[in-house]
Length: 150
Image (cartoon, rainbow, N blue to C red; front, top):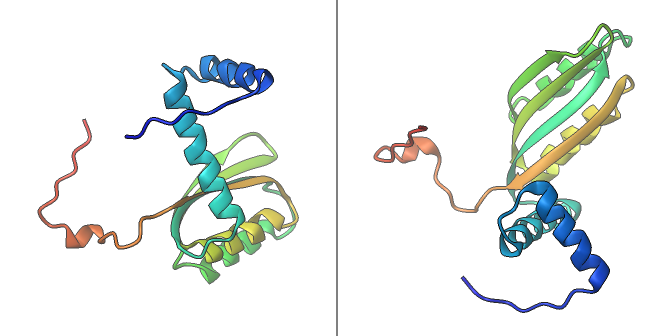
């Protein structure tokens, strides 16, 4: 780990300290590392980086919107190679939320997410993309590796 010295104006430092307390960080270093990672992930996503990623697509929609359910299903069937799983939640009489795990090239994932979010009847949507490391082996290739959750 490297030690870095930075200079921040008083307003930015006050905002950083407020966020540290709000998010429960133990110290400034932890917060700045997390904020830097988040900023770099966002910058990579905004730049349309063509590497692989995993993503969570979250959207809320009006389940009664004309033909929306069919259009959403068709979007995912057309991109079946990207979609891993979907969680469907009934929020109230009119609204449903879906959370879909995606995996593939960042450009293709973003394209699918943009199409889903833009569908008429989708009220809110956001995609969080996390780059995957190049050269990582599929889990089937790691026969000796055991991953336990405790």
